Structures are given as structure tokens and as C-alpha cells.
Amino acid sequence: MKPAANHTDVKPKRRGWPILGGVLPITWAQAPAEIVAGVTLAALAIPEVMGYTKIAGMPVVTGLYTMLIPLALYAVLGSSRHLVVGADSATAAIMAAGLAGLAATASPQYVALAGVLALMTALLLVLGRVLRIGFLADFLSRTVLIGFLSGVGIQVAIGQLAGMLGIPSDGGGPLEKVATVLRQIDQTNLIALAIALGVLAIIVGGRRINPKLPGALLAVIAAILVSYAFGLAAHGVAVVGTVPGGLPQVSLPAVAAIDWNTLQQLFAIALSMFVVIVAQSAATARAYATRYRERFDENTDLIGLSAANIGAGLTGTFVVNGSPTKTQMVDSAGGRSQLAMLVTAVIVLIVLLFLTAPLAYLPEAALSAVVFLIGLELIDVRGMRRVLIERPVEFGIALFTMAIVVFVGVEQGILMAIILSLLAHTRHGYQPSNSVLTLRDGRLHVTPVAEAGEAAPGIVIYRFNHSMYYANTERMAAEVSALARLGPDRLRWFCCDLVAVDDVDFSAAATWRELYRELHEQAIRLVFSSASGHVRAQLDVSGITALVGADAYYPDPAAALDAYHTWEEAHDRPV
Figure 1: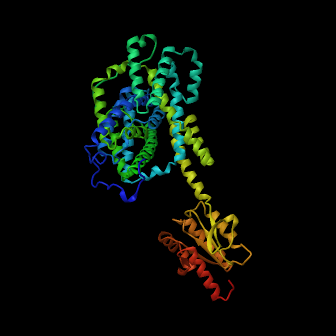
Figure 2 (figure 1 turned 180 degrees about the horizontal axis):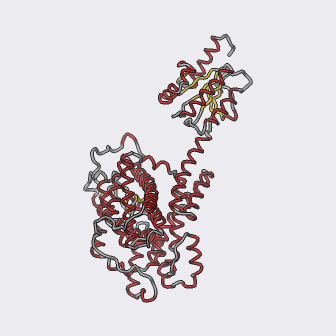
Figure 3 (figure 1 turned 60 degrees about the vertical axis):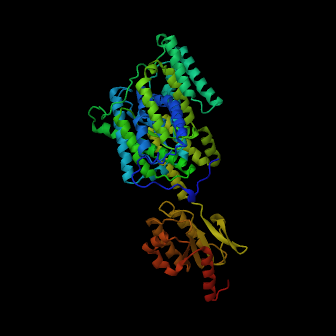
């Protein structure tokens, strides 16, 4: 079991420009494990990234390109020692959905537009670094991410049914694809279906025998050998066809003139992918940095991600992203730095130079089967079940996000994911579970507002459990007004405990000025306790301190209660 993160033993952060920050220092004793991890990643990821090209609508060889220059650039410039960058199903699906109708899939114009999108995404990542907006990753809640990725998985899996059956697909949404498959089910190519089932059996069976077994690679090799030996192309089985070997050409995307409407559409696609990249990459890198007690800066890492996407755009491939599955592959194989990824890049280079010819015999059904499994793995049934058990309301949000992705589109899904994440946050802040403090057995105890009671005869201590902002001021005002009328004793002091408050916005400050006047008319003194320096400064600027007096602030509720007793004694009132 790996030790938990400990602030005292965090590895020091390297200073200066983050070149090779994910590689250095190299421990020679660890080098053999890094090489093994790099070989393992190549064996598992090569068939996977070729599958992603089907999702993206790109030529098969471009999947290999994502594991060459982009992977190496991130390894050199990224800050995470563990994150693996390459083709990803979520960004591939967003790109394919956005480019639909702009160009024919896998055509030169389509590939060029994919390159433009990679460069646009890279520019957004650079802008994100300049503006230090890595925090945007926190605005996609885990709940909506589970729903979003599950929706992508359903869409991806459905999209491969036609390929596995060896029948043509007319495109369209998931429902249209299912309808197309059902209409043409009698045209199923039994050989293609047998190949798909065989690939699924090898991959699933290999995982049951040994999770580290490169089942996808073995299945692809077996499919290629069978296709070559029996000449399956002559029996109506679609194959990948000629795959160009050699290195990708480094150049700007050869795209035709782009009009303003198309540019706006491309920007919207790039922005969607930017959000997914920031959220997914940061979450993955942060998790592994915590596991190994290493510092990680989301903003610094944006440079590595940007460089990787510039490399993708200039080498004829598509957007790359931090991959949780590939990162776990390397970690399970013993890799602990980006050296493993550089080893993978070398292996991919060898494949491109010498081993692309056999890929021409790869049946499309085999590739569809690999992608089908990728889609199923994205459907987080366990995560959805856990959300349902723990937070039924958030489960509804996740389910709605998933439905938007499946029935409307991936781009709309990511937009809805952001909106729902913000709404979920607003809902928590809009209805905070506030409380009052009551005295029992000589100690102050937290009691729900609905069961409100006095801390002592004549004083209520009200604890607000959220930052105070425009959305929750009405609730705050209603609760304060109701508590001011609390009996049986006539209220003399009203104390608001600010221990959970980290911000008071303009609307909330204006509400407190109104509440002060309301309480003052009832001869109730307003005081505060547990105010942080920041909150106290906000109350000063808003004129609230001038109303209540500088002596109306107490370090904690107990001090406020003691001050109330002293005040009562000074006014000759029984306590």
C-alpha cells in the first residue's frame, strides 16, 4: 500500500523553466523498470490509439502520430512525472461531432481541420497558462464528469456496432445508428462478426488471466494474421488498407480558406476540448502527484499540454489529452517518470519506420471491437451507482448530463456539464444548512435552525455555514428575522458566528445593513464572532462595522456569550 500524502515529506519542486521536470532526476536503479513500463505502454496503447482514430474520423496512422511527437513534447515540457498524453476518446468524440458536415471523415480537408483544432486548443492552453486559469478544472464536478464520460462511452460503443457486424453505417446520432443496424441486420457479414467476437474474447480473456497481458495487441496481431492468411478482403471483409510508413511531415495544416462562420464553429469545438483537457489532465496528474508525494502545478502543466497539441497540429494528427487509462498502464508496470513515455515514443517510431505494412490487413471489425470495449469501459456503472446511493440529487444531474451527450451531442454535453456543475454548487450555497448554538451541560452545541433555541435567555447565536452572496441572502434574512422573534425570552443580543464564512459580497453586505436596522428597531444588539481578517475587512468597507461598533466582534461564540453575561450584569438584568 502506498503511503498517504504528508505535507512534511513532499518532494521539493524543481526551480526554473520546467524542461525535463517530469524526467529528472533519473535513478539508474529505476531505469530498467522505466523501460519495461515504456514497452508495456506501447504494447497496450498502440491498438488503443488506432481505435481512437475511428472515433475521431481520422486515418489509422494518425493514431500512431499522437504517440510520437506530442507524447515526447509533453514528456520534456510537462510538470507531471506520471501523466501520459495521447489520443483520448472524449476529445476525439468532441472533435468528430463538431467537424461533422464540415468535411468528409478521413479526407485531407478533415485532417487539416483537425490540425487547426489542435493548434487552436494549444493557443487556448497557452492563454490559460498566462491567465493562470488552471483552477477551471475544479468547475467540473466529479458527478457530472462521471455522467459526461459515461455518455461518451455509450455513444462510442453504439457507433461501433455496424463495424463489428460488417455493415455500412449512415452516421447520425446514436438512435439513428441503432435504427440503421436493425434495418440492415440481415446483411451482417458473419466473418466480420466472428473476427469482432474473437477480438473481444482475446481481450477480455487476457484480462481475466493477467491484467497486464497486452490482450488488445495480441488480438490485433491475430486478426492481421488471419486476414492475411485467408485473404479476408476478398470475402467482403473491410480492412484498413495501406497505412503510410515513415515519419509524419512537420508543417502547418493544409486547410482551405476558412470563413468566419466556420472559424466560430472551430473555436467552439476547441473551447470544449480545452475544458475537457484541463479538467481531465489536471485531475489525473493531481491524483498521481498526491499518491507519490510530489508537487504539481496545473498552470505550469498547461505549457506541456500546449506543446503536445502544437506537435499534434504540425504533424498531421488530432488533439491529445492527458489519459487516465494510459497513465494507470504505466504506473501498474512500474513507471515512475516521463522516461517511460520517451521509451514508448521510440517504439512507436520503430513501428512507423518498419512495421506499418502489416496494418493494411487489419480488419475494420477488429478495430471496431477494440473501440467498442473502450466505449464500454467509459460507462462508469459503479460510479453512477455510488452517486445514486450517496447523493440521489447529484445522480439525477449525472444522468441528465449523460442523456444530453447521448441524445443531443458531445459538445452540448460538455457545456451542460459545466452549467450543471455550477448549478450544483449554487444549489449548495443557495440553501446552506445553517444552525444555532445552544448551551447544554455547560457547552455550546450545534442545533438546526428549525429546532432553534437561545444560547442563554435573551441571546441567539446564529451560525451561517457558507460564504454570504446574492443567492443566499434571502434565506439568511428570513432566518435572522425569524430568530429575532424567538421566545420565550425577549431577545437582547443577536450574534452571527462567521466561522464558516470566507466571503461577504455586495448583496450580502447590503442585506446585513438592512438587518441591522430591523434588529435596532427591536432594541436588539447585533454582534459577530469568529470573523476572519478578510471577512472583517469586507464588513469594515461595507459600513457594517460603523453601524455595530468595533467592539461588536468577538473571537468565538463563547467569548460573545461571556460578553453578553457581562452586559446583562452591567444593566442589572437577571441572567
